[in-house]
Every structure is written in C-alpha cells, then in structure tokens.
Amino acid sequence: MITAIVLIKTSVDRIPEIAEQIASLESVSEVFSVTGTYDLIAMVRVREHEDLADVIPGRISKIPGVEATDTHVAFRTYSQHDLEAAFAIGLDS
Image (cartoon, rainbow, N blue to C red; front, top):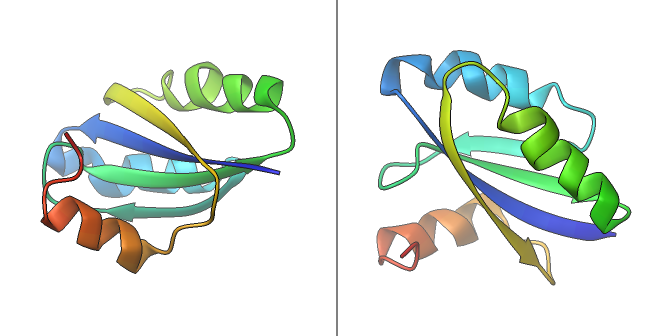
C-alpha cells in the first residue's frame, strides 16, 4: 500500500466544494484544510504507483478550481494532527 500526501492550492471560497469532490474519490482516505501555502491536504492510499498517477494528475488536478497540486509519497501514515503540526512550523517549504 502506498500513502501519498497531496497538497492542493485553490481559492479560499472553493475549499468546501473541492474538498467534497476530492473526498469522494475512491482512493482518498482523508481531506482537511490547513492555512498556509496550500489550502487542502488529501491523504491518498493506493496499491501501486500506477494507481497513484491516476488519482493525482488524472483526477485531483482536473477538478475545476484546483490551481496546483504537490504530491509527497509517505512511508508511514500521518494523522491530521501530524500534518497540521508540520505545516505550523514551516516544514511545507
């Protein structure tokens, strides 16, 4: 199983709508908003790298209103608290 953290940039007024669309994707296990460079974080769990490529550029990047994405493959599962703490101290750069 591969876990990826997808950072998503969008306009603030579209966060709820885009978060809902991302959360409805089959491989997405969590979506939550943060303040900072990126507006949303999605936790994506897939079986293979090919599946990851399909979910990220193939589905998330094409959602209307998504301005940019950045993907980080993780070797452990992070909680929402872990990621919010990392972003709060500036580890997102």
